[in-house]
Image (cartoon, rainbow, N blue to C red; front, side, top):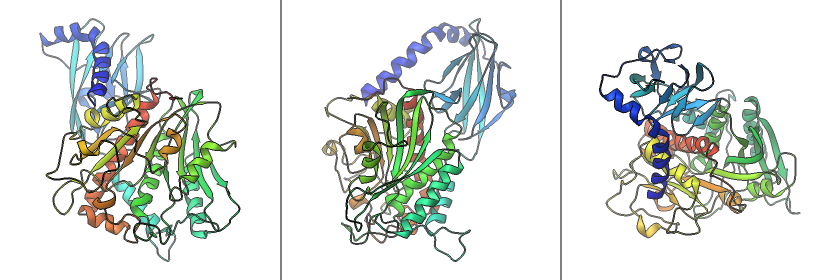
Length: 467
């Protein structure tokens, strides 16, 4: 991803160039804290931030600038500022939100004043409850997959095989619909019978819409909520489908909650698909039918991010001590020798610079499966993050329409033997990674990666439809 890093580096350098003299002056004298920046209405030097939580900042003084590290994120008008530099313009006060990633325990912010002097402010960062977090994911997974007599204690939303009729699927779909609708999204149950045989799967999707600032473009994020039916290859089907794909389904529920506080440039859909296991029929029905809440045909489709089989991945380790593989693939990739897509730069930047993942970590050996065109180059690479043609999930539906896509995936095939198996349970996920805490850490990392990719891609004009 050298091209990706160079692109982001050049942009940062262009923004920082006017500040170079300012910092040069500041280095000649000790930087002092300033009251120009307040966090939660306290002078920044007195404030304590909580990792992964929203905080309010105010910046005072015409021309004053705030520069933050890459793992500290600024939001103005409820949209992310991708490069972490803001300036007070046309007023004496700028207000916004600031949040760290969950992996920050201390940081320094820099205020550059109009006269060219600069102040470095050291910030204490305590433990927080991140806006998307592994514990909440686990609690919701446990509720959805547990079966008990008291429906207030457990949902028992299992056996979600797509077909007509399947009361278990219908009941689960109604529950998921209520979650998005309860958060204020314009939410629809989309049902399409695409054949005349009622014993075969139809499409029943949950589509939640959030209006963007522009009505000329659209983008989305999704996961399939159906699970592999009995007798499905390679291991006979499942009834919980914890990893494939209750994990991604719950991630989408948490994103919907977090995105209530975020504004997007384009109209945005958050979707739970059906019939992925039967050939992407749910996402295809949404993308290629004409209905009030289907994919608009008169708007530019910019990008789509897919969540499928997550949580059994780095930083979790196998019982051998080796880390599980972590996959994030952007596409379409028409030339394997060149990184062509703007969304690839965003994906690489998020993992390498913002979340500071060990991008060059390798195991002593090789992983058990490889379905991408670069496999011979990195069959022992833990952080498998690159541009690729890999398919087999709902991102292909949108990639075929010209959208730039990212597909997040954890271990599969030989690296997680419960794939499409009755053993694909939450208990087995916990056992595979060595405990609930390890599972929560693994899912939290990938959820933050995809969430940041989405918010930054939304504010990256270079990400456009390729057709």
